[in-house]
Image 1 (tube, rainbow, N blue to C red):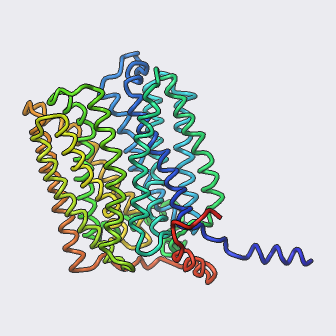
Image 2 (image 1 turned 90 degrees about the horizontal axis):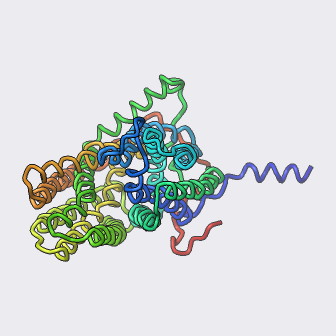
Length: 478
């Protein structure tokens, strides 16, 4: 009788929250694997062009191979708003949504090894599904990190998380360096899938222990029941997000940033080879090292600087102002540096100027995401991130390689194409400057939606208070 009573008492206690550091490390691990996969695909692309064929055994063109790196965007754009809505069904549904997405991603990577063979269509489908899998993780993880991290260090935590993008891509390039064929390269995709399985298990095991803001949980009212209700709720979320003028401006600035960075990333090695007569090894290795180095330092620096500018205990408007201000200043520096890069007369000068440009541009990553999350109601932050990433791909790094390449062809000069990228970056400067001005005048966020309800007990609130006082350097996994 006593034992039964004790068990019931233990079961009624809310689960202890994971420490901020534990949550950050978990999501960094997932982010590394997701972006390592991007780097692996890029590294294996020459082997894919040699071995993979369309239905009529036609060798792949460069355009067809390029679609393998872009098609994930369609899966992401379609799935991310759905996962963002699904995550609001209850406190544990954020973790469950992430786990569902990672299961799809894992299945897509494993299927590439077991079923694709040399079929281009099947490989394209698997790459589409990786975008569906990424959708939940990329839209929801930053929101959880933002909720978990201590006040005054939130941007730094996000900076550490986004650093994993560049480290992951670099790891993907490194592990494919000595791969002799597509058949051998597919093994890496299987290893990625196997490494993600423990992360999925941990995500489900910890589903009640992640930090989830109570405002993100919706009241399951009859108006939002069923398929039609879900669609109505989704449309309501999107409307709330797009009603924020500051969010729209920051989102457009983010798209302009992605346009420039995405286009230069694709054409950078070609510019070095054709304009400055660098070797293939120097072009790829030099730009690769520059991207990793500036990505890691720039991303963390931007997060750290955002926290410093916002102050020790910032409110939402202070964080949004700091983020948009830093984005405007650093993107202006980046635009000027890109313009100077167009005048480079040697490989060394080009790499130095491009590194400085990327350092300035990458420092906007964390402040921009802080601005995006701070300018929408708290319960639709994940929906805001989903929309912003979809828009930044659709009008950013998806069309930019084609447009910049076409300008180079028409002008017969890569310097003109680079100068065009510098001018385009001024659109980001303008959007982020206008966003900062709007936030100064009117504040950051509209009132939270009326259908929100709270599912937080006093014990849970006590846990939150304890968590925010933790030192992230001293936190350990429970």
